[in-house]
Length: 391
Image (cartoon, rainbow, N blue to C red; front, side, top):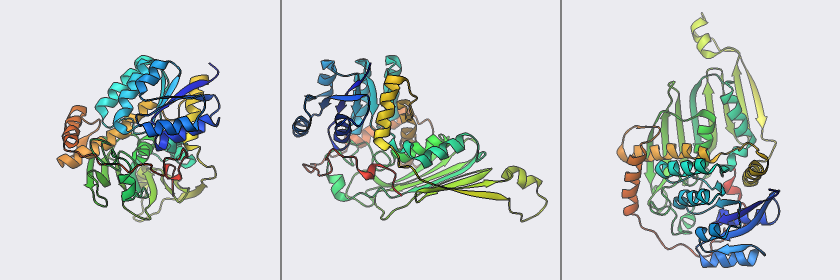
């Protein structure tokens, strides 16, 4: 195979941007051959934008046509898993937008279909391409900070207006979207959290519904987490704060790192704190340390970086930066936080998939879809800075 023939399923904000960049030849080795959307106006827009690209009204029609080697799924959240399963069963490689799904029960089914197919499976965690997050991942995983003690992430610069929530009938509803800030904006950060530090053993979630907007899901959330070794994590996010904050701090027995404002400050202790604590014969000693400041000197490759990586994985066997199987991890965190908030209790990870599904189903049954604003001006076939890391 010299080129990956790809079909984009869903021609909204994200799908149209993916399609345009591929069509313009910006992803070496990938060719746009098909687009699909259930909305006639979006199909007409795709037909006008792309020559020699087939446009379909359903993903099943696209798959049946046999034109593609791979698909990119950019639909509302609930459809990610069923479409992916159909694509794997049709022998397609799959790149899905985040989140992997709305609840772990459906993601487990998708992952099983992916394994049976033997095809390449990736997820659009574009913030993994940020050099500071990659550096933090390597440092923690390599043990440079010692044993994990604490993770604190304040990520409240996901500000959204009421117009944003009104722009789609599915947005900010349990039936249409399946959650709020934890399922739409913060999956990037939940993924980076678990990618760097691993999954905690249990969480306590506090999710505030409609705190700042007229919606039926949460727009403000705080998660408290505990790890097997006793380390703790605190994750705070919101779409109702301005100007907001993006500050990640990770502390271990050998030092700490802080990422904020486009730089990472690393403080490394000369002696492991646990050793120093019990060996030192002074009451108030300070552990000798050294500080290094790492600036973000490279712009993240973001969505195009993931698209190129996905293409190279298919054509050349390149290792995936964001394997699709990783997608379940951040949903474990959000599902556990929701269930904890609803039940007012600690929730173990992995979350009980059946229990969560039943509680979500009850929420969805009482959900009310609204009339979306037509011709949203942001569906302009461009990648927005709001989808990248913002400091």
